[in-house]
Amino acid sequence: MTAQPATGGIQQGFRSVTANFAGNVADPTPIYREKRRTDPVMEGDILAELGVPPIFGNPRQRPVYTLFRHADIGAVLRDNETYISRLIGEGLGSFVGNFMLTAMDGDYHRRMRGLLQPSFMPNVLKAWRTELIDPVIRGEYVAPLVPRGRADLIADMGLGFPVRVIYAILGFPADDLKGQELFAGMALKILAGPKRDPEAAAQARKEALEVSQALYDYVLPVVRARRASGAVDNSLMSRLIRSEFEGERLTDEQVTDFTRMLLPAAAETTTRTFGTLMVLLLERPELLERIKADRSLISKAIDESVRYEPVATFKARECVRDVEIGGVKIPAGSILSMVVHSANRDEEVFENPDTFDIDRKQKPSFGFGYGVHMCIGMFVAKAEVESAVNAILDMMPNVRFDPDLPKAEISGVGLRGPAAVNVVWDVPA
Image (tube, rainbow, N blue to C red):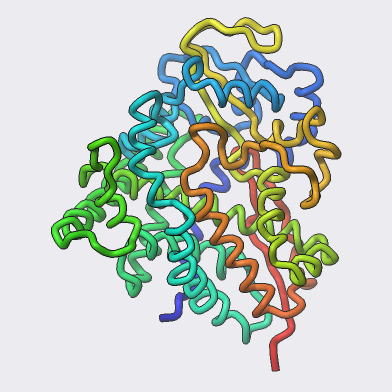
């Protein structure tokens, strides 16, 4: 079956999320550079100054401190006893139920990750890539575009394939394209929920909770039916149903909540990661040709792209005791807002940090998280992006920016990425 270009709900939702997290500057890099130099542990919330809603909940108006340096942020992300994650559940997590892995702490997080992690192991991913990811992206998204000779890689491809792929991996019906678009539109509406204006926040929260409940109501019967049938297939849903760790299994409700959480995260971040990487490569034709000749470099390009232009630019933690960071005393209960975008450009860690260099020596960056909260779906997302780039290089000869349309730009504060990537290529004879 051939997928149709993303329309309606997906595009509208994507624009809404983009606007929600855009902030009041297109590129905050110079601001972060100055903060690393003069105010690396800032008393206050840089997100508020830059006009972006927080990913964390703060109903008790706890003090907020913002961290900009790689060393400070890395130390916080490594210390899961002093700095905990539950505040994510009070923010964005409140729209997607109570099974948000990034909002869990301690032994509960360890047990739940132990139940989820086996479903994302390399041998499972290898089968998914061969059976689902490559065929979906090549057959349903790239092949229909090839005769056209031009496309917006976001609207015509990037918005659609992450939803379609995760839908297939989860084990939903392949022929329900309308349902996939509805799913993605609802999921994106959840991501657009957090607001700073109280009136807008109340309305957005009401709408987000409604669609979140609709997602739950749609998925739960599917999970129950899958369990009743034995859950014997290779789908992610069936694997989660069968999973066991230390004598514990996931309930139908937990599998449903995880599915509800996975859809917006998997779709949104993969779309922007793909779009950002394509912009960075198309801006560098010599590098693009080098990668075309040696596809093993795509993985390195993805990693460098996530360092150089991370999509999700902030992490947050709560202090459980009084601490001191960089000479600044921070009381227990405070919120730490950590600027991943800044840490990934820290001069003390990365040589020539403002240069996109796929050959640089690999050092930890925080675009996919870090430590025990490293993104559980990271390898799935990377496999999707790698598959998409391979398909474009194989099937769209001499792909390049469309000279008749505005050149793509990567922008945004809370979420970064291009709004459109207009390209042309030589149509095969």
